[in-house]
Amino acid sequence: MKDQKPHGLLRALELAGHAVDGHLSRKLTEIDLTEAEGHVIFHLVEVGPERLAGIPDLNRAFGMRPSTLTSVLDRLEKRRMITRKPNPGDRRSFLIRVTQPGRLAATRVAGMFEELERSASSTVTARDVAGFHKVMTALRDACD
Image (cartoon, rainbow, N blue to C red):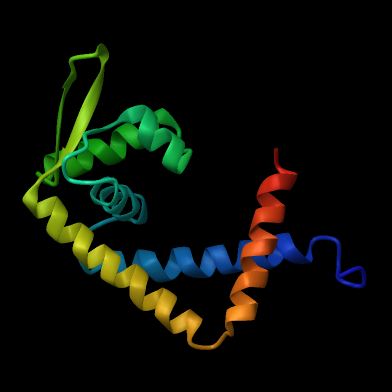
């Protein structure tokens, strides 16, 4: 690793991130979702249909600016993929529930994510994947 350029890991991560973002953006356009909308609706379904997710949950999951997240939720609500209702435990916030159309969209998003991961995984070994996870953990730890 010492003979690698100082920014080699970050540059590789950045390039891969841009490639994944572009790929997912193109695929999500097919179902009339932006990348942010696709990630949010998938996450809401992933946390469970019985659980109402609040804005703080989504902020922690995505690190989006509150105004960006609000805009994403507004668009999903307008298309009836989610509903928002006041949080009885905190009247300043809302709870979000995924509707049936939102669950259908999330299923398609999940398929896109799985297809991309399956394609990428087909060219690497289990050892490669373990090394990748080790590097990702090291990068996260370096940011603390």
